[in-house]
Amino acid sequence: MLAQAVATGRPLIPVFVLDAQAEVLGAAAKWRLGLALAHFSQVLARLGQRLILRRGDPLAILQDLVAETGAAGVMWQRMYDPQAVARDTAVKAALKAKGLVAESFPGALLIEPWEVATGQGGFYKVYSPFWRAVSARGFAAPVPSVTSMCTPDVWPASDNLADWQLGAAMRRGAAVCLPHQRVGEAKALARLDEFIEESVERYRAARDFPGQIGATSGLSENLAWGEIGPRTIWAAGQRALHEGAAGAEHFCKELVWREFAYHLMHHSPQILTQSWRDGWEGFAWRGDNPDAEAWRRGMTGEPFVDAAMREMYVTGRMHNRARMVVASYLTKHLLTDWRVGQAWFAECLTDWDEAANAMGWQWVAGSGPDAAPYFRVFNPAGQAEKFDSDAAYRRRWLAEISPKPGPDALSYFAAVPERWQLRPRAAYPAPIVTLAEGRARALAAYAARDGAEPTQTHGEE
Image (cartoon, rainbow, N blue to C red):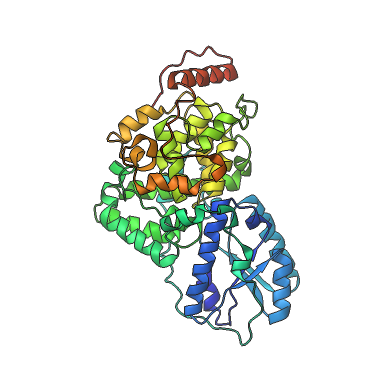
């Protein structure tokens, strides 16, 4: 979008509006937004530009800015969640009614959600054919970074970013989480280059092992905040594929899995708040409960689950294999509604992505598209044995099980609220429920939903 604006040759005024939708972001996401804005402001300053900050109703603010500056129009990058679509549609209509230019541009996705359809003209509900349809297309090369812009003679007033207090809800956790963030386009590109050079070759084989540092790209954080575009990542993945890197195709498939989430959100926006599959809204999941609180705190007594929950609290991210395991444990062993977990991820993730997270939670729970069968219950102990056989991941994040806990394990206790009263030398808790009991309970609930006997015994992973 910025390149298109620069191409007009007109003076540009970069603006960010903190609207009601941004105000309700979870603590970690809102804090990370603040980091992104601070960094982007510095980047613009090096180009002789300024980032104008305003808070409130987007349409009213944009109309005020047009009146203040004499601007000919407004250009922005498109968003796809239902609230943003409704907001931007209204803004575009109102500005055009006043004779102003009002244009939105793609950039956050490889392909617009409405531009890919099945042979029957509908939308894809299964990933594999979606991947085949998308990967067969060619994508335009990424646009080079902007290096200069025309500036206005007079700048409008701007809010002070510090006054917005975007990180207030992080409290003492901000200092712990900060070293794990790599903010801005330059660091995102460096992260991509490092991954392609050092890790993409082994990506498919190593990506499921959370103890292997650098086996995944870590780019979800930068993708979430627009610090790198999917076309840039796709182009790098395709180059690696053509050069014979064994894991490059699988890396590209993961990028298209994200596209699939947006495709589904566009065509069935209820996926964000309701069970996507018919017949699941009445399923006997528990609402929030004390077991779910133990899960949130990384105190379930299941080491692989607790390690993952603590990783998220400290770093703002969680390894993908671990996400599947903790989601399965909450929705199946603890029979807790997937929306309880979705809400906690929204609170804790610095790479929060509404579409991808809703699809991921429902995929694991069994209520979503392309879902794992409900009887497929991830066994945390079995997953740990398979993907963390040397316990490196668990020892990294669980102080209670290590005679000499490292800084990552100890930092969890520096980040959590004091009211939780967690201490690294306390005894590690006993499991909330035995894995066999939790699995049997889940299968019985599934059978009751279908009116069948709970005879299904395979599918545990």
